[in-house]
Length: 454
Image (cartoon, rainbow, N blue to C red; front, side, top):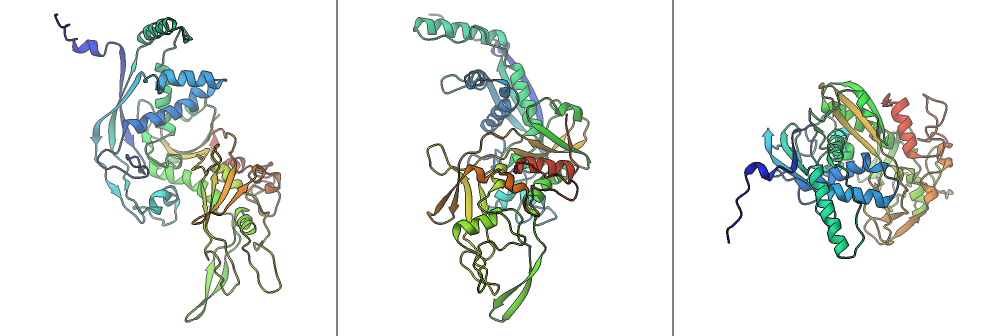
């Protein structure tokens, strides 16, 4: 029997659309290796990781338009594949074409402020004392997908086989997947990134072909976008975006005060940060039974002014949240502080077991326009229902279930100095119903002067 002729080289790609992009990394990469949370300086960019990011951004752009979950899953499987059907899209990283991966090393990673915005964004790397990959190099990305007529022929053959097996057939017509792929690529490059901590701007990317031409191109998606122009470079734009989140989550505190600490050499006076105006610290003090208890006083709440308790509004901005108290569990100072143990707020999985994380609905990152202009960007994704929560004492089996009304509540916008209440810039509350996400958006708009893309 004569073997068939070897196909000509051109025939191998006759059914494919092939696009090649030069992608530049414009902020440091955290993680991204085979082992979660760790960098791979030999193979820093992995196709499997890119595929996961593209699937997410397809859902955030194209996928959000499907009204039924079944329709969304069907189309998602057509584009990105499923356990039963391989994706008609292939992704390859050919090689690094400009520069080589270099390290930014702890403890400061080369940034000026020890507790600045960059350090806040690089929290997971700092916590593990890990090196990160320096920004500034480029790689070549090759994306291939099947042409529409080839996909249609494959669908017809698939339905013929399903009919033969007496199984339900799929839709007779399959739409071209090209627009879906391009839209996911554009959203990923401009709004997403590579590696970990991409929602805090790590691993941000730029490609001149996929980049937006102007700020007006930002609109048109289901999520809200806020921006600030005129930044000197991507790192500056990144820092300013991250600082908004850092300030909103950490800066609402009372005035600093002097605190006396008893040491072997006597009593030492130190200047301590004021107590947080967020309700979580006192909520944890109440739940765990730890409190300031000077003589003749038995009151779990020792903030000034008093904050409400049993509330955890910052859960709306992403989980887990780790709460650390400076004095540590059960340690008393000369001021009679008794602080709770370190705790962690986590979601509860549908099975009832401890969950791992709920991704933040807020994305902060730089975006580089095709013109070369650097923009500081904040993206507010549509917030889905928050799962049930659990407060866990770290290092023990002690847990406390948290009710849903402890996350968003009108009481959170009305107490004195509330982070969700009025500010010196506006007499109305940052959030009328006690939503941390709405409060953050108004904080970014009216107090950090980010403009909303319309």
